[in-house]
Length: 318
Ligand SMILES: Nc1nc2c(c(=O)[nH]1)N[C@H]1C(S)=C(S)[C@@H](COP(=O)(O)O)O[C@H]1N2
Ligand SMILES: [Mo]
Image 1 (cartoon, rainbow, N blue to C red):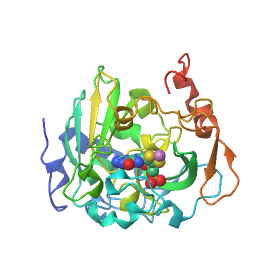
Image 2: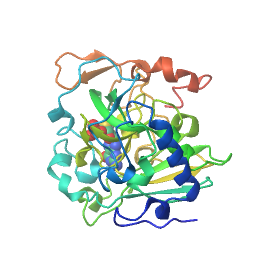
Image 3: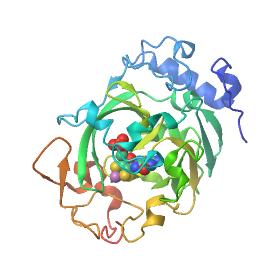
Image 4: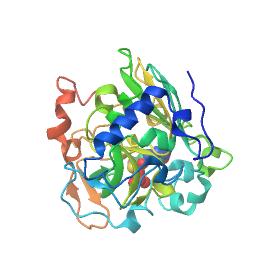
């Protein structure tokens, strides 16, 4: 079943959302009326239209998952980026940001689930509880940042689509738009950019779908309007500008693994014990600092996530 995508925000939500999701959302809204974070949101119709993901950036809850570390300045977070669709140099994504067209935006949900369909961004995201989460981001290139993301937990969003018992993995894809995205004119990576998670990783409470940072809408260069943030994995797992989510039975292919299988595995957990073939992963440079820091296993999130990999050889499954 493929649901119709509305191009304008004035279509009634019941027309674009499957009925049970609609009811779920009503129930969610009623339930959340008592929650501080959401209580000030009077009705969906008062939320901003497509592109701002139905999120009132004045009413964002705080998360217990936030780390207590100094955040990387906004200017650095938004001008030192990896987003190969917008160019290979760190400054290219900001310079080319206008080439990413984010309005309107929809997300296709497909594969092993009971409720596949194509959803408006706002229908897709609005049942989630919007939070600020301050997470470390550790790039495989051995630098890191601390970023106050704004987003919703991934697991509850995915559950609405009722993954079947065959759904062992989830694949994500970035927008494919070679006419506009300068980086996609050349085959530097397997386009569209794709990434994957095991289903338990996707359902982990730390997995975040981010729609903004520093209390504001997501800048294009950081993956507007919707990106993944997996804080215990190397940054490249945190796929930007997502247009497709597919539940699969088999482990999905990932762009970096296709491009360099010796250098980039499926799991990509931050692991100081597993060097990249061309450089050490033991230490990292926090952007804005001079001296390097020790890299922590699972990027400092071992207490929360290590049990998911119990019994696995993490040198083989890098
Ligand atoms: N679609 C897409 N997603 C992507 C990338 C990319 O090139 N394309 N780069 C990844 C890498 S290598 C990193 S380190 C992070 C960087 O996120 P940031 O620019 O918001 O810090 O995005 C990841 N997500
Ligand atoms: Mo990265």
